[in-house]
Image (cartoon, rainbow, N blue to C red; front, side, top):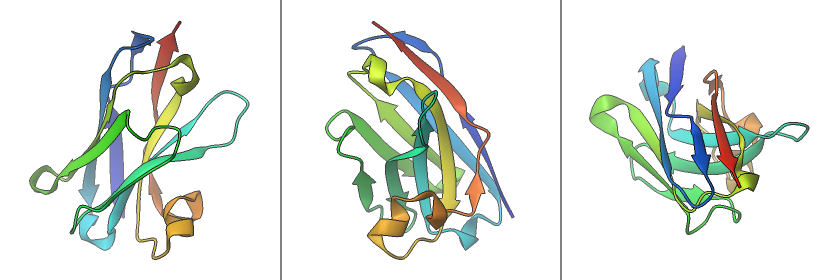
Length: 126
């Protein structure tokens, strides 16, 4: 089992920045990828970004490329999501997830992940 806990959600004005953290514990070695997803009210949960624990390869949704940066600290078993130039459309509950997806389609899909955090609310005001 892997336990995930997100931190850092807040209310921020458009154009502002936030950094989310996701601390992993338990059998963290069983998962090769950490991902971030988000779900806005009335919408499906969508992929935001992912990072491979070993090589550090990163992947982003087109909607956040150039604004969001995913990173990791292996020693702390923690992944981060730095969010800059935030827009009201970024308002959502943000979830971190851990898994071992082996293809790009599964890496960007919920089905590629076995473990999920409880979510943290990000609200961007206009």
